[in-house]
Image (cartoon, rainbow, N blue to C red; front, side):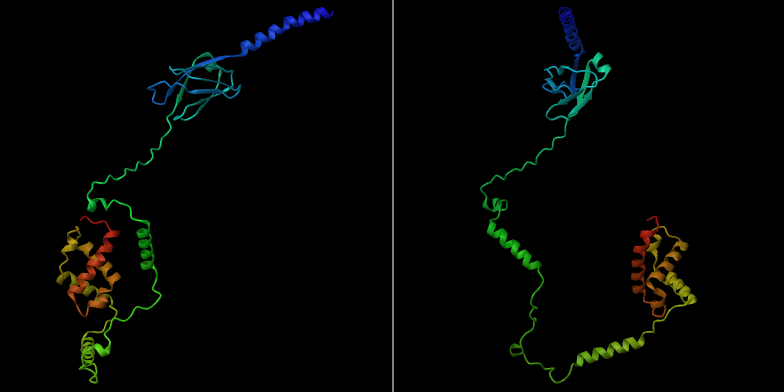
Length: 270
């Protein structure tokens, strides 16, 4: 009985060995770059599932043991890593693996200056000494810092100045200027708010007496000019300030200033 059991066991062992051998699949394939222009050699091919590895040959081809659902990894310096899970179709036909190029940052190249022997020219390219650079830095900090002490008055001491002929006589020129300003102010009409009729009359006078060609150059017709003059009057208070004292130069200046803002929000042809 014992002999019969041993004999059956010996027959069973080869069956297990052959079953294990046949379960090992040879996966073949080739590896190229993402341009498809050349095959890649010396690519490390690793079967992560059974911990085996190999390299691609000079033609970019490889052979490795793998079963269905095993995960292969392809690694090469200068290329992105690629992982591939084995399927039934991969066992039946060769694999085609594409490794994309990795972006390479080129370090900045610093070209050292070659002296020419001309001291005036070479001195512009020579580095400053540490003491000079530190001194300039301290000077910049000092110039940017706020004043800790008030600046001295830019005046001449009395003992070094000449005789003051106006001493004791009062500031006659200053008083005269004050009187002139009072006369000018008294001669100007008082500024008051313009009503509707006064505003319309002022705008009509502007159109009749002033040169508005700078508006017509932008393709503005009479209706558009009227619209702009109302805008300028609302923003600059023109009728209030100038309907009684029609100062052409001042009005023209205010109109052109208002037009700069008007152009930003209105489409014009010019």
